[in-house]
Each structure stands twice: as C-alpha cells, then as structure tokens.
Amino acid sequence: MGNFGGVELGEIVKRSCVVCGKQIAVTIYPSKRYIGGHYFGRLLSGNKSKSEYWECDKCFNE
View 1 (cartoon, rainbow, N blue to C red):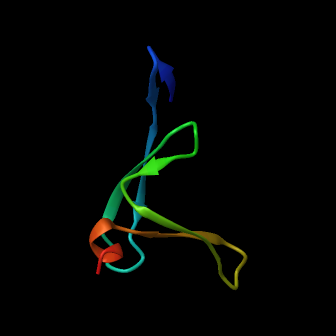
View 2: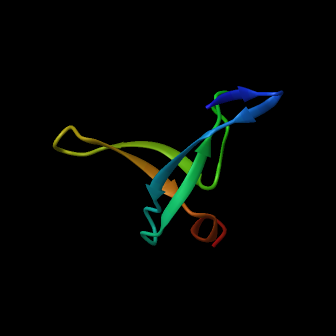
C-alpha cells in the first residue's frame, strides 16, 4: 500500500455483503477512499464484538 510513481496503491480486503452474504473484494487506499462495495459503518452486538456493515453493488442498487 502506498504511492508508486504517482499512482496511489491500495490494500485489498475481503468483506461479506450483509444483505446477500456474497464475498466482496474492497480496495482501500491510503487516502481512506475505497472501491468495491458500500460501507455503512460499524455495528455493535450484545457481546461487545464489532462488525462492519457492507453491501455489494447489486444489493446497494436494489
């Protein structure tokens, strides 16, 4: 991750769509910009674990 010859490189992370369960590959750039999914924030559960709410493009556009 970083800048290579003026091109911003990103880190690819795997996330799951909360709606359909499809695995999505999200590229996160150092500038905090991302592509490959739609992020809605963190979810708190009763056991203090944190989850992230992501949707794939198909579910987001429905």
